Image 1 (cartoon, rainbow, N blue to C red):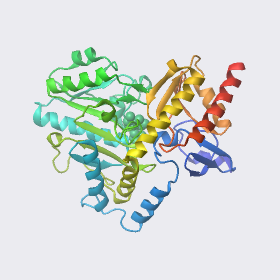
Image 2 (cartoon, rainbow, N blue to C red):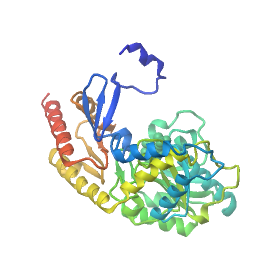
Image 3 (cartoon, protein in one colour):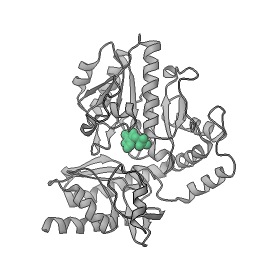
Image 4 (cartoon, rainbow, N blue to C red):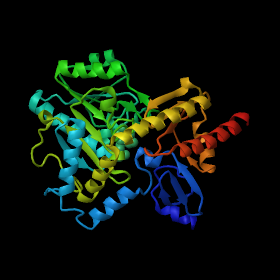
Length: 389
Ligand SMILES: Cc1ncc(COP(=O)(O)O)c(C=O)c1O
């Protein structure tokens, strides 16, 4: 491949000079024919792995039926997916979009509108230090990632950051201007940091007490990633608003805002988007949900999670392990995570380092035990070489 071809892609991040050509299940192949075991899966997106038969069929079938009839009309997959999502989540309405950031923008706008209608114009949203909500201007402003601190100033106003898992700090931040609390139940980009049970339950009762909205960003945790369909079920707490993305489309751009009836107060013209409720994407989302939302599928995620956790605990120590389901991380004693990720990549294994002290694992939800064994064998030999170097 002519290296100058890379120059046509706008630079936004450092990428290895490898070109991927195909994928199947947990495996990716590059243009030279090298195979990679993929434990990142498009950033926790391809929940059924690469090119799963069930999604290829759903896509093909929908592609020959209807792609897009404009967001100004209803279509069959949009209605079916909205019904499935509301039934599964216990929420009442779904607004379907393309990306996690767009879903969070929608949730932020919905909270602000609800504040105008029901809370005398309250508009500020409490978000968490370390939390991640996307890369649009408002979702970057809601994000508590230190690196975003001074980027693209001025930020969108109206987000009050508090330390994660600190209920008192949340309570102290609530005043008449606050309309909602928005958080990831497990902070993914911060390195897989789960909220404590007490924190989530405490937030739910604070929200009730002060009549403000509890909003879960489940873009990374939703659609079976934690071993239940939603993190809300892991914690046994019902939010007023939930956002989904990533796994919902199984690798294609699909995201959602789900909300209680009592919160839905948009008037015509206030919310929309060309691809909202797109039939082609919704057809895929429906097939994803039908597959993941089967008891044995979720049971298998839990079983394989235990298997992977035991293997990681043997290599890194139990104390260094955190996460739920197939969103797991280990903390490292030395700050060398990106070097380990690079070594693994050279050996044909894709894992992720959210920061220098942490390795993250987010394989396909249908990853097999032999694939977990293979991943561990590559990682073990990389760790051995690194640590004895
Ligand atoms: C929790 C969370 N929210 C929102 C987003 C943004 O999603 P997208 O990149 O699809 O806009 C991400 C992406 O990593 C995420 O992890």
